[in-house]
Image (tube, rainbow, N blue to C red; front, side, top):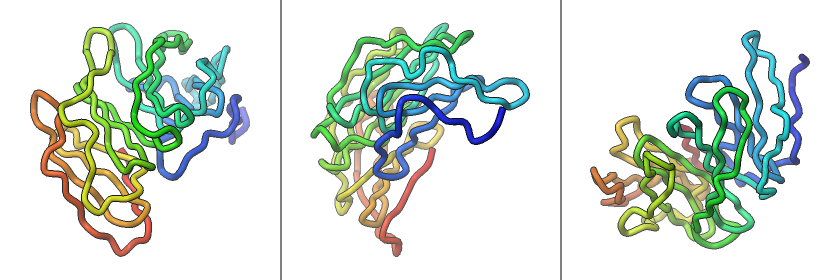
Length: 212
């Protein structure tokens, strides 16, 4: 019951602020990105952390950002596979925490570039640092499948090294950071998820971050 708790699977390769640890909406499980797949950690009533048997769950890919959404009777975790430049996914048993690969893979630009990811009720967005772009997807509420939003991917003027992305609760505005300094903003078109009016602001910081 000691803290800190080590997680099997090896260290994730994180370029900075790319959400390598996320919790399910009920607060029962934590999901951790590792160098060899997805590790699942159960949060007991007393706060103790237990590694779910079978962790890390394959495919054995090096993960960066993670995000989780509710899908029927299970949770679906989407993860960024930085080596192959894709989004992969797992379905999580709400009772046991066991993760089953969804067997899907969605390309998000140059391999080695993808890092941060965000998902809400309708849309999912992922960042490719190398390409300096944001990829958008519509989430099928029935099966969790992803379909590209119109005009994806999107570039932001002046944003050269983004690592993470977040969206407001009403899914109307997207914000992306820049390790070169500054922030990018775009409106999310209702009904399609398309990013519109991409712009940016400068920052006195040499590197910025967004969390959400």
